[in-house]
Length: 176
Image (cartoon, rainbow, N blue to C red; front, side, top):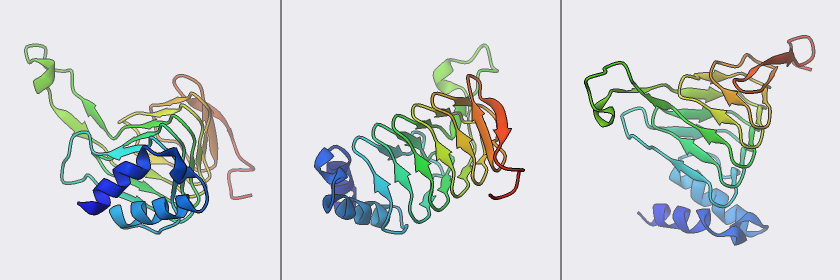
């Protein structure tokens, strides 16, 4: 309970974005989500399960940076690899509401969950949106600023636009 309270206090306080206070915030988030203590989470970042279920997990690797005003829905489960950068204002969703049954109130429609894996050394640009249909953002991938990702992104791909489309593959498709 105390760790959740400290995470809330540090989430909304910009002071914890600067050295040496960000190290305290990193330790709190590391303990809260059982990960390494070198995650860098900026102010007003919201990491939570919008629709809690058995898969609502959040794991992350070393050197992860999450920008200010970011929302990460961990309802379906999110796993972030080492050295991933998630820029400011990014929205990541791991659930979606069904709209198939016309005679059923929207509030009572089924919710489907999908786990998301963000490969190491990936970069998600500012204000990008990752929808609940996406299961993987590959290793070394770059998601452009403002992109709306509706499909999986292959490793080393650069995607952008609404909806996000492949711009090119970094290098020759293998690690640089």
